[in-house]
Image (cartoon, rainbow, N blue to C red):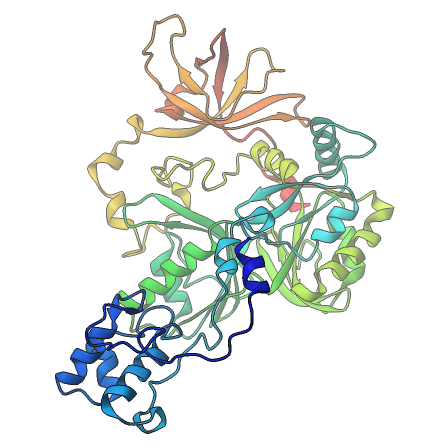
Length: 512
């Protein structure tokens, strides 16, 4: 109604530049001219009586025009008051320095920001549209939209994921890993910087090799992990978890500026610059070999945890020999603008090998079968490397790294009382546990029962033909072989504690 009334109102024939829309004395009228800083017409008059004549001095004396509107609502009226009281025209008085926003921001922008699709931003990978065209079901991972699974012919999620798992284990699968965080660490001291940040040793890592890195907070708890490749003596390609890229880069920048300012290092976020195509399975090399130019990717020339710069489908690429499935695997890093084109080239090359696109749910199952953790799922902010089976990654000869002194605390010295990562087999094997379920020793004991741990991941394993789960259990490694129980409202499910690696413990399949 107000909008209609304004639209139908007669056009204004003139205006008044000053304190109020009338000619009353601004020195005696309480009229606000800066509504954010509560500056009135009387304040401007007082500034002039105090001897301030410069518009810049009046501005600072009264704070007029210093709020977020940058004077859009107030400065002209203040100039009108000064002009009247000083008896000088506004051009002679001068104006303050204009700053952005030069054009006022409509209130509708603020009122309508968090509505509908604008409630939260969405990030799409370069392969997103291809996945949507194939009928993928998406899930939210942070603010990324990721393909969860690719149903065919009315498949349920369980049947689609089982089919995708079989394909990766038996032949080859293709997975969009573009959401991985990526940070370029460059400079003469790049290796020393990573040596101080991560628990692993980096100075002796040779160019062309990869290493799995674990990053801790100062309190010794795992904050992130990822595979890091050394391109040259002075350049590293660091990957982080999907949701961890901003905090890892912020942490690195903080330490570089405040703790290690003497190091000659530059940090650049490249998460959006690279699309990452994971090709996993026994036929992975057969699929990509015809597309690779300028590199020998045979098992002898390019072993597991190595990398090479080459061309894939004619596009410059960083090719990693790495696996998050336990199978022979490659990750193709190409400029994001070429991501879909390279993906389609790989997919077309893989048709003769029955290549299958798989989503995040299948990725979770495959990595859980191998006992690979996901930071934020198997960790809860209170897990040390030793708790989740990563003590082997710690550089024993390193004099220092972030979190090292915290790991020497008495609370961490005796690991037996801490929660440790174990595997679980339910009895019977067709029950898939709920993630987050508590584990107790005696389900018959009335509440409150002593909670010994909780389930971090639980899936149906098509490879094993039964359910599997990962859990953090107090003193878990000493309890392997024991039976605990998951207590539900109406029953208790027996679970047998096992080693967290369910599949190919020797790692033979990684060698392809």
